[in-house]
Image 1 (spheres, rainbow, N blue to C red):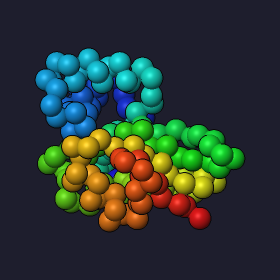
Image 2 (image 1 turned 30 degrees about the vertical axis):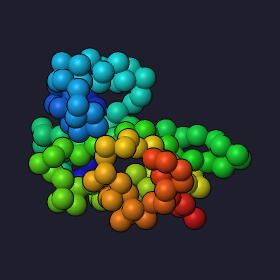
Image 3 (image 1 turned 180 degrees about the vertical axis):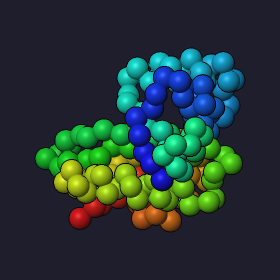
Length: 141
């Protein structure tokens, strides 16, 4: 499993996966939204093998300081529907958490949406706690 910065030639494939986050929007609007968000966040492509052209998922994350604590903010995490249920989400989250620990973060923080109930179950299974509404945290220490 590899997590590498997303390349421009991967944008159409990535936009389809981004649709997982916003299934109620049309694909054209999703592609425009993805292009807009891509300019604001650094996205990473999740691939099974280094040389594989197929993207299994997307992630975007950054570092925040909140109340004198270092938080690893997982802005986006989406696994393509055909790759869900095969362990890629868990492996991706493990790699992201390892990166956060290496950078000495105290918590992983993520916000979700009400319609992503399947994702919420996944977050709970992987050790996240609901902080408030659709905000989830996981202590790293």
